[in-house]
Length: 287
Ligand SMILES: Nc1ncnc2c1ncn2[C@@H]1O[C@H](COP(=O)(O)OP(=O)(O)OP(=O)(O)O)[C@@H](O)[C@H]1O
Figure 1 (tube, rainbow, N blue to C red):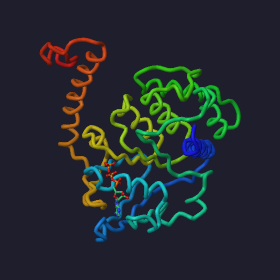
Figure 2: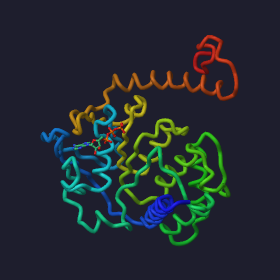
Figure 3: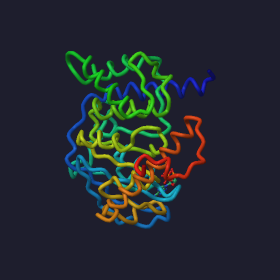
């Protein structure tokens, strides 16, 4: 391991320790995003309020500024990021203590590229996190988190599995179950979990059932339409806020069927089967 790799390793460990310490966070009744400027320096006309249990998707072309928006929320920006946005918590700027606290993290982040680097078993890691949150017996909660993660992941794993040996899908499933059941952070940011090999709809339902505010950047129409609203980003600014309409919800059902079609074909492909029969014959819902 060279110096840079060692430093990256230490940084990742520090992040995970911070996550373990995030044992309490203040209640967020309302989160407000105040507009800043777009990439051309023109004003962004935005005052968006979000409440617990709400799912908002963030859509826009590559490079339009979706991650910047999530980054602004993550650091509770106060006009000090390239977008100039400001974030209010319960209608007021967050106190600096809250912004930079590693103990009271308001925001949990999940992304496609996150990985565990700790040399621990799944059971030991979840138990450590649970001990930070609870006094008393943590065993049942650890079992619940692992069972929930297995429900989300395609391939099952047990508590003795090493964290670093989990697949991408299993890692994401464990992070989501851990965030939903153990993390105190009331805001969850998701940066593209489309190809994670997990049950994405169930994952979102799990987070929302815990009354989190969830913002999710995505290019996937099914995920985007699951949101109550979607923010359209262009040129570094939110240019539209679209409420998911009844007609869109009806289309969501049709899109989910298409998705099942592709999943059925993928399943055959993975199983080493041929894809040469008519597509309708491969579909569970058309048979
Ligand atoms: N309002 C803004 N003012 C200045 N720079 C911005 C603004 N919004 C975004 N940027 C910058 O533009 C670049 C691209 O933005 P970002 O990575 O957020 O795009 P993205 O939509 O997430 O792209 P992708 O879909 O490829 O991940 C980044 O360097 C980001 O800091």
